[in-house]
Amino acid sequence: MVTPRTLVTGLGGAIGSRIDELRNRLLFVEFSGKVSSFDLTPKGASVLASSADTTWKGTFIIDFETGTQGGTGSAGDVWWEQETSVVRRMTPRNSAQLAYLGHISSTTLTYAQLASLSYSSDSIEGSNNSSNLLTAGAVFAVRTNQGNYAKVEVIEYGYNIRVKWTTYKLNNPYKVLGTGYQQPEDIALTADGLHAYVTERTGNLLKVKLTAASRASATVISSGMTAPHQIWLDEDQGVAYTVEYAPAGRLLRIDLNSGTQTVVAAGLTNAIGLVLTNNRQQAYITEQAPAGGRLVRINLAGGVRETVKTGLVNPFFLTWTDAGESGLLITERDPANRISRLALAGSNPDLRLLATVAARPSSVAIANPYQLIACSDSVLSELQLDESVYSPVGPIFLGVGHVPVDRITADGYADTTSDAGYFFQVKDAPFGGTLPLMINHPRAYADNGRYYRIEVDGVLQAQAFTDYQWNTT
Image (cartoon, rainbow, N blue to C red):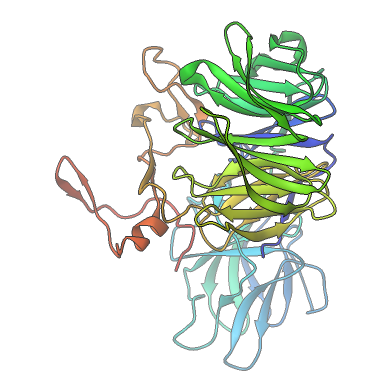
């Protein structure tokens, strides 16, 4: 089971959320009336502490915010642990985490790259033998127990190890984009990333431009519903689906141009979560029924309903685990307060607990195959998974970038807005100068693939990796 890491606290009821892939941020609503965002790629940082050349004493702990060293009982981030005269390791302390990067240039390693790494609570091997990873020139990153980031380079290995480091405090990634909403429940992002649809518990579906995202600037698309909750947006067909939280709730299809509501299914019991299959043939819905929470599946053409899973505890919103629709992420509220993965294969789908999170979770979004962001009542938290959330039955290729090299800013972000005719309009998107290829390695492995190569127009591409791997092993 994964231990969550808190990203933001003091929120006003974080509920529905979506990943804005073009800008690498989480969009979410707060029940107190806000549309908010959390940047997954930082846009700025300040240097907290740096040291060009420091001797780190054996058995001592360094606090990377202050640069001070202390004994094994002290507060701090990383312990240069000496088990014996040979067995040594770098061990994270007090909720700090590490990421080993190997022999790379620490000079060009930016704060944004540090923030995008996959960190763990595992120690880094530093024994005085052939297994040592902390030889001169080795680099590792630290996510401190205060949520800041440090890059550390080994200068000279020994019982007292010489290192140099820089610690960055990132600019606040949490922003309120708009206010004035009437108990918002969910948010769905348009394909161009410029607009969003929001459901309000008071009965409305709204459309809002994200650059002017307050309620006063929003357009009411449809109204008169009973506590509409999760949205499933189908822009290709010009419609949105939602469910009502009511003793006799409905699954509704809403025309995004006219606002006309069509009842797809009735008789739902306190429906909350909703996803549709890509072929638009079936809907999966969570219900908070008096006899217990459950997940149901409804055939949209004939209205045939079947129960998929019972025994859920106040289930809330749903998220597909992958494009192959092999599983669902399910949030369950108090007293369970957990996020689980439901594999849909078989007659009795397997529900596996991923994490227990802060009170009253509502939704979970997939930032990348190993990183989930959970919205709980007052907290955003991050879940770093040990294995990919993508299923082996999903597609092999998950995405390819579309950003020309001459549309990369000096800060390393993609900006194609200067060319109004270009089909892929993005601004401040976290792309580099190469095309990011998203590959479903679990699916490839399940298909007995053990190696892969990339060809462009039949020509083998054999360049070295220019990005960090999620798992360095």
